[in-house]
Length: 126
Ligand SMILES: Cc1cc2nc3c(=O)[nH]c(=O)nc-3n(C[C@H](O)[C@H](O)[C@H](O)COP(=O)(O)O)c2cc1C
Image (cartoon, rainbow, N blue to C red; front, side, top):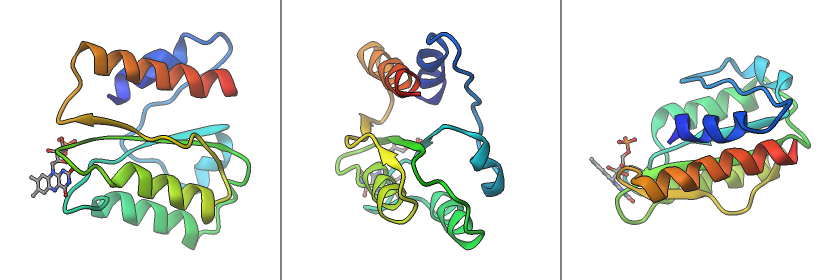
């Protein structure tokens, strides 16, 4: 999903996209937009995503006004990306794309198309 999102974003002229498994919180200030991938386990985000958000808060990284988006694969309930967006909006005061992109288990052709669309939407906003 992340690779397809990056592909979509890179289609927009002038936008640079970095695809990372992890990013140091302090480096986030260098980006105009942040798209977080978060699978849902036990109706919530996984510990690595929670820890990442906590690190950003702990280091008081200023993300105010940056564009935020979230996506994730899930089995049925898919809460994690929505929870990430809530933190982005309420804690970090980011400008979030309201709807998270949820895909059941893994993307098919249509799912990949949606992922590319998300990347392009975010890049267009930049
Ligand atoms: C132990 C376990 C708990 C899960 N809990 C949920 C859940 O609460 N809600 C949900 O939508 N999917 C749940 N899932 C399904 C995962 O979200 C799904 O397999 C998803 O594709 C995992 O993404 P990943 O392969 O990127 O880790 C669970 C899966 C496992 C193995």
